[in-house]
Length: 426
Image (cartoon, rainbow, N blue to C red; front, side, top):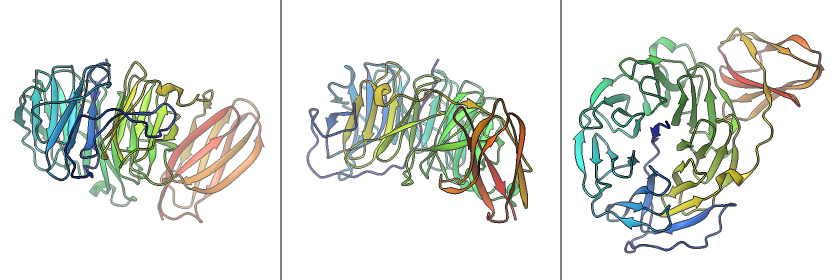
């Protein structure tokens, strides 16, 4: 069963002082397949949640009067109505059409009647909580300001489990036991000799204990989703989508969603293969579990803040300029190329001070290109372009021209691909 996941994003709102009212869809030019299904420029929307293909909720605020607004649709976004009550909050998440939550700092508001009424429950942690996930209907987690809290009774009561996770602000669980937190770039005392990296930790016991991991990610983690117990995708503040299949020890960071450094504030997967990533003015779509991403600009008002991809292939976006977008066939954004075969590359030593060796095995002769990138996706050097014979191969790279920090490598040919990261310490 798909986990119910929400991610934190910067709560920035902009708009005008006109009166709020129900708006009809308009013909604002969009990217292929995207349409504006609701417009109200007096509001700024920051969070969206569709528990079913028909029923959805959008959370927003009038930036002038600070009036909180929650909209609901029961016909797949064709029409929207405002709930009569809407608590203060920054994230909305509905598990069913009736049961939902609005997270507001250190308070969790819960409804059991589709938003007709809300009951506040204190979370009891210090600092602003801005991310929540419910892997089951009873078990949920919130994160923010280095704190993680858990509920096992559907949000009625909360227990804090850790208050020393540095700048960790986002949380995701693949199931009841296995989860990850991530956040701002920093250094833990144990890693004081390494370059700054995003705070990152994992749990295998339902959040009771957390294992800090040196992430090698030199940009802040803004969004995170756990696909399976060992596999996750994170969105970084520099516009890069990073994927790990070994609990965050190594990362494939070859997917640069935007070269402008736009924050990737939201990632949503409808299943283990099909995902949607939302940046300020771009969306990314994956149909192979986040290995490859196709990006597309979306013309909107303000900035895109949140999005969700549903199992029926429909995707929704919200912007802080008061627009709700829909794409009824997001899979037709483009057609992914046939996936390349992955090669296993051994990197030693890592971290390295003077030179580093890459060892790999090529099944057949291939013309191979080997490149080095910065962690923001900028090409630093092409260190090899040659026809290599089949069998075991190795390449030695001198680090004399590289400064201390994290780097990405990518080896590619017509049929094979390998990528990963390494660290230079001098």
